[in-house]
Length: 212
Image (cartoon, rainbow, N blue to C red):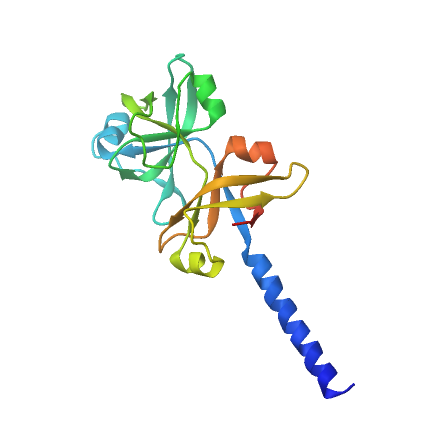
């Protein structure tokens, strides 16, 4: 084998390795978000008692955590969903995130919103062990989104504020209009709700392919 053949073989091997790494990077991990509640400090104390502190059950990303505590939520049909997980730390405004299926069951007209955008959203009642909170707004269906760091965004070459991904498998499909959320403390992960996950037969820890 002459030198030219050896060089070509090495070049092909390097190019294949680069291609494989790029393909792996374009495979984004999925996180499926179940219904949950973010509480303001004031509402936390009404529901759980004065000066109450949430107990950490599981660390999430960017300082967020799933708490040991749960609440019951009640909609306009006076139907209730129990054991809804509280996420911490406390926020400025209380927010309840549910799926479309939950919204139908509860009888609430929850809009699809990015987290934090609760103006003119649905009313909801929250019941804790020490009290009850009735919110005139604050209940939403979380809009699908992707968390990434500035470096992730640079490597992926994402310039737009929204992306699409392809889901493979028996219920293959494409998820479009995924909101891009960038923060130095974020891990690269797409967040969808349980309705979307069930429709595509995917779960937390599965991977989807970045399209744009």
